[in-house]
Amino acid sequence: MKILEVKDVVKIFKTKGGDVRALNGVSLDINEGKTVGVVGESGSGKTTLGRLIVGLIDPNKGSISFEQRSIGSKVNIRHPDIRGKIQLVFQEPSESLDPRIKVGDSICEPLKGLGVEKSSWNSKLKNVSEKVSLEEEQLSMYPSQLSAGQQQRAGIARALITDPKLIVLDEPTSALDPTARAEILSMLQDVQKDFGVSYIYISHDLSTVRYLTDETAVMYLGEIVEFGETSKIFTRPSHPYSTGLLSSILLPDPDIVMDESLELSGEIPSPINLPKGCFLESRCPLSTKECQDNHPDLIPSDDRLVRCFEVEKMKDIVQPSSKFEDFDKSFDDFMTKRSSSSGQLGN
Ligand SMILES: Nc1ncnc2c1ncn2[C@@H]1O[C@H](COP(=O)(O)OP(=O)(O)O)[C@@H](O)[C@H]1O
Ligand SMILES: [Mg+2]
Image (cartoon, rainbow, N blue to C red; front, side):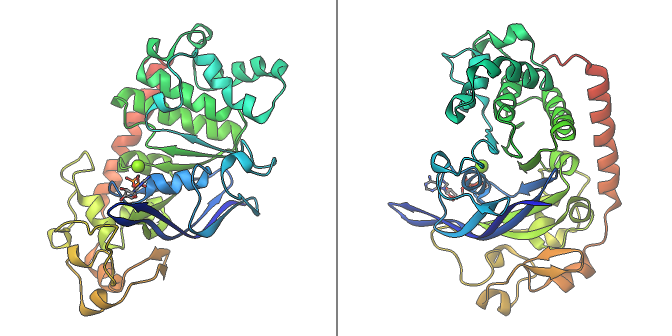
């Protein structure tokens, strides 16, 4: 069942240099209990999308609805049925934990805003800290006394305590070392199993997106350029930008290069001065006159949505890559080993 619907959302930031078009008509559905990954280079609009969904900022155009009800504007004036149901976990745990407040109190803070009876806070705190494997004594410490991984677990507990249906995770593991990262990812999977919560997982770490998500949205300059089942996109990307991302250094295994003729070149255009044609045109090896003159729509193509005039040509060029399957397998093995050998979450 669909719980969140983002429709044709446009977000423009006014700056001294001009209007920054951070999102240029983004539509996205999230289903109950599922995880959608959002990937793309820095500046593609991922964080802006996440902030709009949790109501930290308002769109200029378009609508966002949660369980068929418009989320309205900012979070503090939301309908009571929606408040607390959509939560955000930041990249830096320090953004959700006040250094002067004990960890347990920080975790409980969202309950205050929702007017939840204080007598129930302790049992809720106990419940969520168990879920994220924080010890009772850690709850009476200050954030600086915890490791980065523990701090991020507290950030996740703080999001969980309002019993949300959707959590936006904005690069939640990028500040962590590989072990802490693997632990958090398997914990997020367990939490999803227990609570049935949906995730929007924003990351430029494609290997973790491949691991955690059901569907993937590839973003470029404020637009979704490809959307579909994660396994299909990673095995055989259909948009030249997705292909470029997947074959880039972002993946840890340098053997994974698809086809040199598909490498992207040149600079990203400014979001203040976007081209009238395809936004990728100046960087794309397949570019034609049509791509210069017209802006492609995101349209169905076989098993996914793709925003590219040359999608048929792409299908001929990009062959399914078994290298990704090998890569998936080694990553799965790593995660399994991590979560079984660590037992007690240490870091
Ligand atoms: N508050 C803001 N004021 C002006 N420009 C912004 C603001 N927030 C984001 N932007 C711009 O919007 C674009 C998208 O940014 P962001 O959503 O942070 O991308 P990502 O998370 O994918 O790196 C970028 O060009 C960024 O500089
Ligand atoms: Mg960001």
